[in-house]
Amino acid sequence: IELGTSDLQEILTFTTALARQAGDLILRGSEAILASGNVDEKKNSVDLVTEYDVKVEELVKGELEKKYPGFQFIGEESYAAGSRPPLTDLPTFCVDPIDGTTNFVHGFPHVAVSIGLIYKKRPVLGVIYNPFLDQLYTGAKGLGSHMTLRGLPPRRLPLATPRPLPSLSQALIGIECGSDRSAGIMHAKAEAYRRLAGNPAEGVERGRMAHSLRALGTAALNYCMVAQGGLDIYWEIGCWPWDICAGAIIAQEAGGLVAGGHSTPLDNDVNEEILTGRKYIVIRAIGDSEAEKGADAQKRLIKDFYETVD
Ligand code: IPD
Ligand code: CA
Ligand code: CA
Ligand code: CA
Image 1 (cartoon, rainbow, N blue to C red):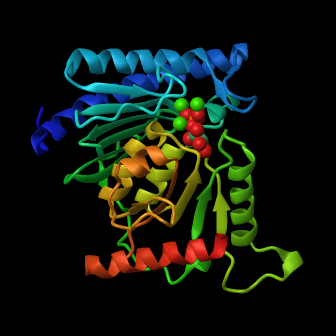
Image 2: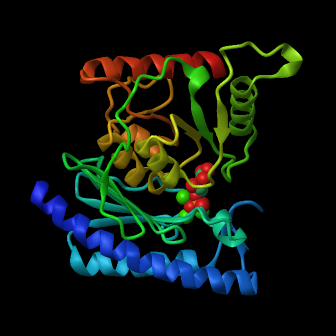
């Protein structure tokens, strides 16, 4: 199977309609779950799942398999625990049926279905839809990224002309608790939070504190927020390919830079390592006219970030 721009365009149209259909099911599911309180736990007591996570994945998987029988599928709820997702060079849909399950069961309206497509081990297309706020985000390789809000015409992302961020101290940064609360991960996140927020006990260093930190509760919508320009940085440890795939291409096509841990070369390429590596940083588009200048500014900011949190 070879995928060109017109194929991506056609897949975008199909997956956008499918994401809206999944969104309707999520909304109905929300009513049902808020009424029944039927919530199960997976690997620990903060790793939540409902029957709607499974139902939405079945719907999306079924429709994708009917329409694109030659494509592979990876989804959070049908993924066999323990094995690394079998990434091949074949086109592979990578789906999170409900990203933000904790928000979903609490009725916090930042919840999305995320449909990504990987081709030759790199994300090439993403559709993310939050039915509660009717926010649709789409992106595809070479086609740019767009946001459609409540029936308004689509708008190209980022919304504002990218401006350089003078330093980390002017940044609004997304950091999540996540559901993997293992000691190593929580230590790194707590340390990052402490240093970026500024610790009064140590004397707050003016110019070192970030403007503020945010936890939206969904990896997919954090990426969209970076693509849109609402977040300057989103940093996460502990994600899976379905958390990353669609969001990464949306952020990237909006001029954002997606990188792995600080040891990964910053080549603005969402490769297999980042996709399956569970550790990454996303920086919004920065730069004026010259793309090169923007990329340098983004890399400086990543360096600054790691110098601060490490
Ligand atoms: C989670 C959310 C959360 C992120 C976690 C993810 P789920 O996905 O995206 O924001 O911090 O790492 O696992 O379980 O709600 O699909
Ligand atoms: Ca989950
Ligand atoms: Ca997820
Ligand atoms: Ca999920």
